[in-house]
Length: 388
Image (tube, rainbow, N blue to C red; front, side, top):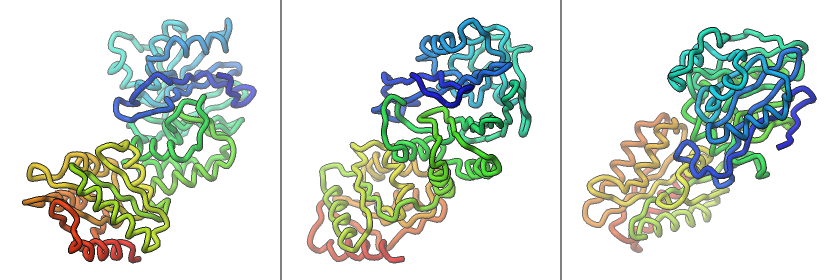
């Protein structure tokens, strides 16, 4: 794929459109890209590798770009296998290449490549270190827990390019053109969402740099309107509201809870909620549900009771929110139960373990099917949720 970064910096990554689940859990209907770059100067640096699924294609891209020349450095920003999966292949092809990475990344190398001797093959860099390639100079900044502990980013000083590791990444192969924010948001909250403080620390470092181009490890290269992308990352990593609206998430067994959730959504729209999004947790993409929960200012969770607990799709959803650091939101709770309603207690307990969650009253209990007598409580709940 011909993607020009600058005259000296080339894209050598690959698209993966055959993958069904990224990280064995996230649906990627438009695939994923494994981004890798080549900096050509007196010294030649390869920036990251690719997933093992695509090593042959990636190596062909390198050979085509380099011809008879040999690279001097392989810069490894992140050791996750979708980016470092071809390290042994590049060492076999170019045995004199040096791996440049954080000390922690170098410690991780034997975890993934047990039978490779990395003695004298690595250069450990720390915060602020530089690597001169000739006219180009890379400066390294540590980014621990964005979203692994060994992560670093690098800034090429002469052409003002930030190689941002998983930061600013996005689901979707590069051959598939689409609006950036939706799949970047789903990627962020499900991959990096827990680590808002660490992302904020990295953004503060980036703010000191004159950046004209961002090259992430997944998704398109960002060259224009960088303030837009950085601004969204600032909102997301502060757990602030991006969209004023309500996300209604329901887990229904036989349709009774679904009817209640949809009725509440109608009430919210009548009350003037600027946006109302409804998701069936049994059928909709869980990662997208997590994304919408973080995006919206308010949320309604409605679930059936099940085996003295809560219907599993809702438990799974709230567990995901706990893991990803959901916080700073107002949440309304609706439970359903034919003879022993208990879902509300479970959902409330899980929500209370999250930070700065306001549980709106009343918690509404439905017995099997919504009845006329339930309407006032549902309307009151909608009204209280929408109060400032």
